[in-house]
Image (tube, rainbow, N blue to C red; front, top):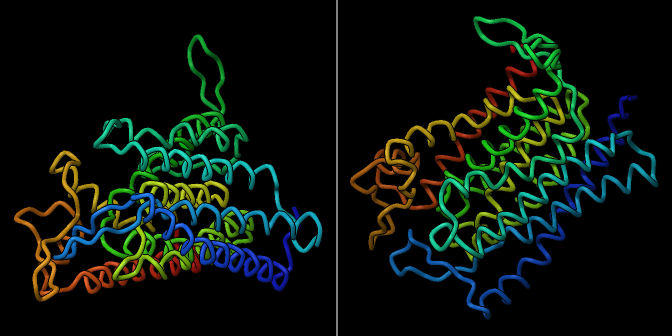
Amino acid sequence: MSMPSAPLAIATLLLCFFSAFLVTNYFLPFLISRMRKRGIVGIDMNKLSKPKVVEMGGICVWLGFSTGILASIFVFSYLKWIEISLTFLLAGFGTIAMVGFLGVIADLVGWKNGIRQWQHALIPVFAALPLMAVKISNPPILLPFVGFVPAEYFIPFVGVVSFGLVYSLIFVPVGVTGASNATNMLAGLNGLEAGLGAIISATMMAIALSQGKIEAAIVSIAMLGALVAFLRFNWFPAKVFGGDSLTLMIGASIATAAILGDMEKIGVLLMAIYFVELVLKIRFNMQREGFGIPTKSGVLKAPNYTSSVTHVIMRMGRFTEKQVVARILLLQVAVSLLVFSLSYFKLF
């Protein structure tokens, strides 16, 4: 596949960004109004007054993201600005769209009202089928102390099995499921989920563009545009929550971009904070939330246990919810800059 010229590639990405941003920004006020009238709201646990906030805002992010992807397909099909693999791009879009749809179901049913925790965790596995089906061929993986994974394996009574098959049937669903559930763990504060997703998506887009991975860049910037628009309504004090339809979809988009762009190691490193969150959550069997205890002064106090990165930040000082979120986002910016630098200088 020929590399797209830089100006046309950037123009395409900008079109994807603004298409996603404008659609999300346009439909969110309408969704907020209608959802409130129908009583589809949740309680903001980090506010002393416990206000009711509209839920399922991820639906509009899905609409915006879809528009961004469709804009890139229009550019490819009619304007001929870029060359992309429609097979890979549509497979990635199919996976993310399915994760978003399953997230809506999870929002409507709720893990406390019918979906068990293990069932909730396995939801994205089925959505990985489109990416599994295209059998994306990635370069051999280098394992520490082992070396490069062989391109083919010989299994007794079975025969020769290619690594590409192993990658498609095992690594792809594990990656999509792991990333989707990771972004669903670190949540619960105004602007936190969308903010982290936006920073990681921007970093993935920049790295993908620098490496000429246009499909991965398109997926990342379409999600970025939708998340930036969503943040206008989700930032403190939030007018809308994203719900599982948002958090699962963010993780799926990160995993999809990593798979399409052969950037699996980059994706893993960018999600370092989520690995810390996982360790903290495991200590309490994944049963504790990351909420704080609101006070009259606006400061969020940590509970008498530490089950989230949010609680770690709360114990570092007297911070408001906005300040807690800002510090976690700054930490993600630092991680992203480090990963981008390592990638730029080809240090891994």
